[in-house]
Length: 133
Length: 133
Length: 133
Length: 133
Image (cartoon, one colour):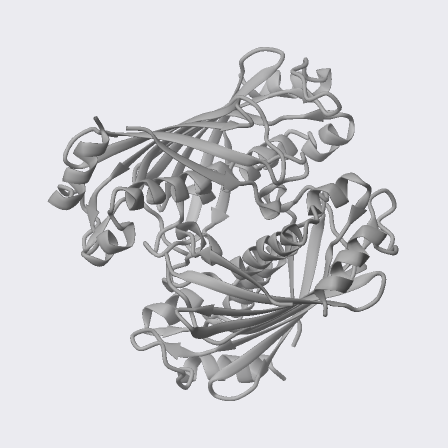
């Protein structure tokens, strides 16, 4: 399953190169992951409230082309369940059908109290299993 | 007492106007407040760990002139103890002796658990009283 | 005329107080101003391309209450045309009908080449006059 | 040659996990690259003014452990000259001698006018050759 989501480049995220700053992609990717989960009926906020966190453990982005203020970025994202602890989101980012960037973000489930790796709750695992087909 | 602190404009904080983005000043002012307290021997981190928070309740900035990437901003800051709950930091921001901005930031002490206003701990009050002369 | 716009609190904009950081409001207000202009058929991007900039000259925010990750902020905004050079946006920010913050942002028109104050282009003035009723 | 640089975790860069947000590392790495070049007597600002840009083309970060507000991060960075167009910075990030993260950032030289890849100016190549030993 591919999740599709659009985000517009914010003025405050541009830099003096007059392009979207490369760090801002990382924040946009986070919004996209959370909306992906929401589209599956899963609340990341609820996950944290029930005692789990999903910090990023690995991040890789290839930037093909810059993008300007006010352009609309389209994120096409797949999720891969690496184990019962780890998952990876892969996104193709485009704008007006030009290829902008490729990103891969790995996250691991930890418990909120001790910050130790732990198995994801079964509700999340189920949702991810259905989405990773 | 006037606290003086320098911060260099970061590339990621510029925008496509090729100036420091107006929201970045707000983050720089926070760094300056914390370093002001540190220079007085007071740790904001320690304050939070002992159960108190100092959220911003009011913010006012007048921008006189833009500032470019890599310029060094000088913050000259005074603190005013408004009450045993509230305090205000006033900063003059300059670069190469040109006047860049004036800022006033009011904070209130709240307790971390209930997020209700409360009297600042006496160690902080003492430090602020000596600094606000 | 009151412009209404919703923005969801992003995870990357929270801080360790577990609330939206006070500087992030400034970025959200910028998004809201640009969408206000867009709703009037005016493109801020087009304005810059035609040689004008609208930097912020004054900023004032009163924070009444913190707001958490994933909450939806509602911005109700009016615009006032102060002169042919300056304009002010006033926003009431609420979440689930609780009052969160009040903001006032003044901007001035400058020309892109010399960064000197100048009269706003008539297309913008017209749009603002109709909106400021 | 290994360049060593310290940066303190800013409050505004923490998130509600009460750790430095993963996107903020990307901004800190940029500060470190620029200070690396400055320590070699080279001004990135001057490079842009002479008509060249160094956008990021690839980014990889492995996060080993979270880091808290006010902690001091130590960046130990090497630079590799991949070609006359591309260069890569590799950083080990630690805090109080604990391993925090590993990062690799590739940049490419482009000309400011046409945004096309081009050979780095010889002054930069020279500096990088001496630093990459």
